[in-house]
Image (cartoon, rainbow, N blue to C red; front, side, top):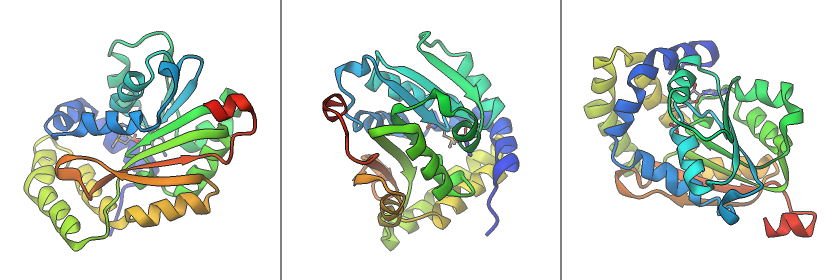
Length: 246
Ligand SMILES: C[S@@+](CC[C@H](N)C(=O)[O-])C[C@H]1O[C@@H](n2cnc3c(N)ncnc32)[C@H](O)[C@@H]1O
């Protein structure tokens, strides 16, 4: 099963960037699911005084969800695809939100001084990276002690029914729509990468192995129940009273 990786994947997202928002708007629950996951971070005081990181921000849908969940936070949003970022940048954002063209791996190794972050959000990223464990190590380096992590990801429950539903939706809707926009290879990658990726219990175990704590998994509503999950965790235990409150 061939998956798109690294530069090939970034190029495929560059090409798909023109139609990405239009196609995801057809997916009932895409934006409400992102918002639900961002809100599950339970950031206090509308995010006042917090610095948040959106890894794999794409055209900014996940960044918008973070901003709605924490409207007073400072947000740094990072993505490997210049095309996706161009789409994000034409949207209106407050000055507290900025976008950087870097891979998650590059951001962790070249911008260590940007952290530590109070929370990291990664929506639909981990299934796409070559080495999810390396990215999780990077997340831990970037998070402050006790900082919060949420991944919003296509990660199947493990039940044959959910896997069959995912295959049917891809065959009937996702791949035909992606073919019409000239992005068949990306949407075939989407179908395959979900099947190849960890199930929700496996990804939760991966987070625990990476040293994250308080790992929890929550389903999203609608047709994506059992197909998309929110994964929540902490970077160890808070060390000070201030961090415990956060
Ligand atoms: C499916 S899109 C999701 C975008 C956005 N988070 C959202 O929820 O709409 C996945 C994004 O991850 C980005 N991506 C994939 N691998 C990456 C990596 N290693 N580092 C940074 N971004 C990456 C892609 O360029 C793409 O924009």
